[in-house]
Every structure is written in C-alpha cells, then in structure tokens.
Length: 112
Length: 115
Image (cartoon, rainbow over all chains, first blue to last red; front, top):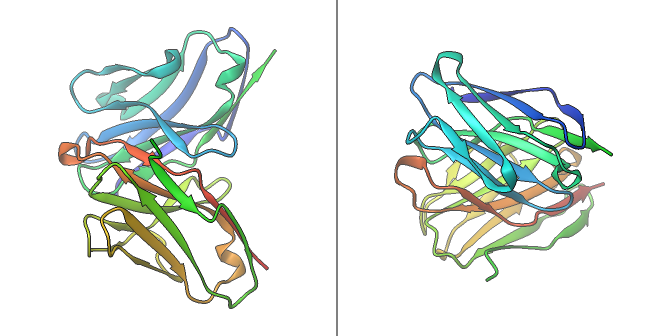
C-alpha cells in the first residue's frame, strides 16, 4: 500500500532560520505528492504539489520541495522562517487514483 | 465564494445517539471525501465518492455511513455513536485533475465529542 512517513512530529526553529520538514513516500511508481498546511482551527490548504513536471516545486509563502526519486523523498524547505509559518504541515501522496493518503503531520514552532 | 462548507461545526453526543454531518461544495467537483483527524495520526479517509450516487469505503469506514444524492452534497452519518468516534471531521472535494493531480479543498472541520 502507498504511504508517506513524516520524520518528526514536532520541529522548532528560530525566526529567520531554515525550515526543513521531512517526508518519505513508499511507492512502486512515482506518485503525485503534496504538502498541505493547517493553521489552528482551520481546514487544510495546499502549499505545493509534485506532478512529475519538475523535481523542484515552488509553493506559496516561500516554501519549496524537491522530489528525489533515488531517496523516495519530498522534503519541504523555506530559507527563512517567519512567525506566521507556525502551523501543522502534512505530506500526502496520491498514487494516481482517487484517494489521497496523508502522513501523520509535523507541527512547526517558530521562536522569536 | 463559499468553497466547502460543513455543518455543524461542533456537536456533543451521548453514546448510542445518531447524527449526520453535512458537507456542501459549490465548485462542481466530482470527487468528495470524509476524513477524520486525530492527534498523531494525520488524516484518515473514512469514505469517499467519485460522483453523484456513488460511494466507497476508505481506511476507517466502520461505524459510519455516507450518501451522495446530489453532486454538491456529501453526508456522513453515525448510526450509533461511540466514544472512539470523538474526533475532528473534515470534508474535502477535489479538482478534476487528470490521474490524481488535483488538489483537495477542505472545509473548516466539524468537532464531534461523544460522551
């Protein structure tokens, strides 16, 4: 079965520091991959997605992710964290079917 | 532009009671989903629908039923609520991206507590 694993349920960074949230997927074929963000008491919204057009994907709010087939990874990065980035982030995979499978989520804390 | 709307937003039930969560979307999406979110477990798919009149089971369907009588609405029912069904429930609909590239659009969630 297709799945995603997010390393670290909590990540804490200082404002202005690099943000790195890790995601690995399991798939026999390259899937479609997504990062979603959830702010407190809200639903999820799309940050970015990989659909095989380009391995480096840029999203909203300065985030980007790189698809690495050899490492089966799709890590999310942002060069400089802002207080407003504090949220929960979910990696998700759609194995070219109807269903999207989510990772357990990583909560990002940003310290002033 | 409402997007995906869930009602109610909060509900407290006693064990054994029944209830229905309503999801409505105004984006003309074919695919609709119900997920539950529990701490440390991400979102788990309960049921989904790929079109009016069709439904299918997801990862955790037991104790839930769904109906998609109209394209814009997707109902989630709990026939006999149990404390294990205490959760936050999210409805989502999907853009008609080819082969699964479409993103999910989410409602704001419905927080259900079963005592």
